[in-house]
Image (cartoon, rainbow, N blue to C red; front, side):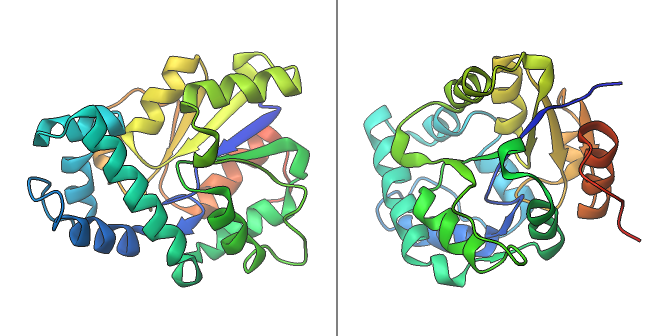
Length: 222
């Protein structure tokens, strides 16, 4: 049985219910990037981002500079709307029950956005002790995983990634770590199951039970 010593949570789509705002901002940015399709559903997200985020957008004719410009604009708009973002309450409860030294938020969002949302959502606690590796670091996610392992003296088998997109599964594989793919975020679970994640999770309750079994975080939800 795998025993994870540390958990790397994605933010958007795993902790934060941000898909509607994300899709709205993608659609607004189509004024500058008209070749990118409209996004309204999980299936639309799977179409626009079927693999690594940056290479996915090249399919729509964007250069590397255009891709960077798109994500810079989109991340800035998401940060400006941080007060509209709400957590998935059961997932926020999971984070609130965990020892903050046992998990890290690994995200393409700015850490200020993450802290704003978490400060309004984690029951009875401060977010000051939570480690967040955000967009401002300008690091690939695989490099962020390596940083977590180095700083916490972990082997790859001891780190678990929690993600909601195919890119999360691929980035975890690139770093040699296991991934748990969840089905309430940006990509539908039936699509994620076509890829090689270690675990597939359909609900926050199932996620908590997975972490209880493999990472010792407490009792399961009733």
